[in-house]
Image 1: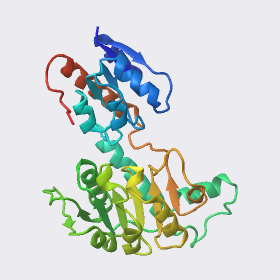
Image 2 (image 1 turned 90 degrees about the vertical axis):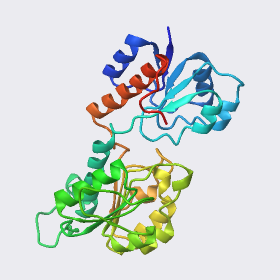
Image 3 (image 1 turned 60 degrees about the horizontal axis):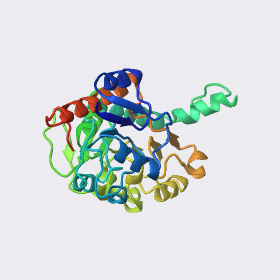
Image 4 (image 1 turned 45 degrees about the vertical axis):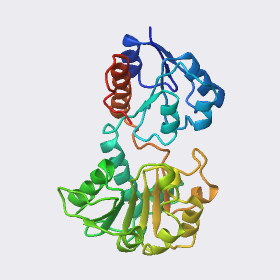
Length: 317
C-alpha cells in the first residue's frame, strides 16, 4: 500500500480520508521537520504532506541520488519553503492548496485593518489591565475607514478578496500594485509603482506570495513613502516586510500603525514590536478556521489520490 507521511497533525477528517486510501503515518509534533526527518521522509515514504516551516531546500534533495518519495502534497497555498525546481530534478512533483485559503485570509486582513485603525488591541489591553477609567470623548481616537483609500500589494485571489471587502463593506477607495492590470468587479486604480501606491493610501495591505522575488519588498524606502497616519497590514509572508525597518518606522511615528499575522523570523517576534501599542500582533492565524483547514487538508489528499492514480494532480505547482 502507498505510504504517506503527514508532517504535522491535520484535522481528524483529513487523517481519516487519507487513511482510507493510503498507509498513513502522522508525525505527532507540531514543530517543523528537522533535516534528518526530512531525509527520512523522502527515503521511507512514497508521498509527503509538508507544510509551512518544513524547509525542503536544494541541499535536502541533493543528499541522495534517488529518493522513494515522488510527490510533496503541500498543505498550504504558499510553497516558498520548498525548492520546487530541486524537487522536480529529484523526480518529485509539488502541489499546493489554492482557493481554500482565500476568504479566511481576507477575513483576517480585515480583522487586522480594523484592530489597527481603531486601536482595538490597545483598548483591550487597557481593559484587561484594569486601567480603564470609563468613556470620555477623546479616548483612543483612531482612524475611521469610510472614504479612506486601501492599497493592495499583489492583486491575486486574496488581494482581490480583501479589496472587495474594503470597498463594499466600508466604502473604501481601492488602489493596487500588481504585475499586470486586473479585470475586477469593483472600481480600483492600478498604480505603476509600489512607491506611488504607498504614498497614496491610508492602509497598505501586503498580499503577495513569498519567495526570493518578494523578500523585503516592503522596505525602508516604501515605509518612508507612506503618509504618517497610514497603517501597514501583512497577511502574506513575514520576510516580505523588512522587520527592522518596520520597527524603526513604528517607533519613530513614521507610520501610524501596523497589523501583522506573520513575522520575518517567526515564531520569534522582536521584543520591540511586543512593547509597542501601535501594532497588532496575531499568531499566524490567517487560515485558522476548522472548515478551512479541513478543506486544505482534503485538497492535499485529492492531489495525492490523483497522482497515484496516474492522473495530473488538480493543484500542480
